[in-house]
Image (cartoon, rainbow, N blue to C red; front, side):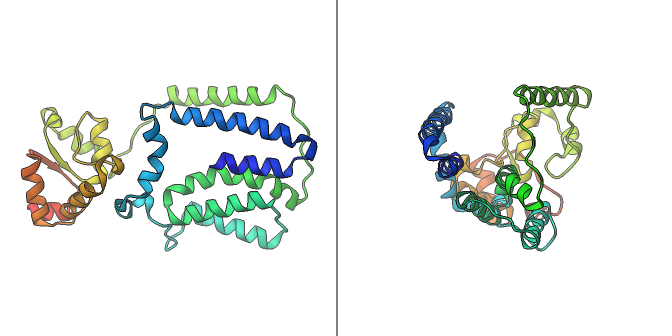
Length: 263
């Protein structure tokens, strides 16, 4: 969908003599992108996945699908306010298609927190040239053709150096409870567990089979509603889960409703 927006922008801004070339190049890119979208183990289901996911009512219970929260400062809020402030101080002009793309990205980011990352990646592409014009900077000289491959190689080398010199570590947190994992008998990992939503990914990482994790689409609305009820401390939902799935052990943050109920 984003590629279609960029293609339309390129077509509108191209001279009449070059529009056929623009259509050809973007059509090839679009066709290859479409084939790449199908080149997964999920095939057509993977392509239809976003539509299926957005139809789930369970998304209202997942933090990354909630609307942006402006009650406290965050990076997205600061970036958006800086953009508005700059546009008020300097004449910031975007072509109509790019302006529509930017407004759409802002709307998506305000509607769902997870789309803020998409805004962070795409918005600079849309704004780079208008910002340069607004501050009155001279157009950059055309770089030699070898500049981009060299820069990409340098970035790859730095990333590899960072990976091998300083291996990534997960700090102790709500989603990475190392202390609990260290005290956990390994034999329990393969046993049926009732875990807090936040621990699902970590349990997979250490070899467990969680009751639920962040892939809400794989569990479906009905399963997620049942889990939400027991996580909120519903005794009937908890009893049903313990019996139905023959739960042998549980793991949840201290003080959570499910822990209080079982205590």
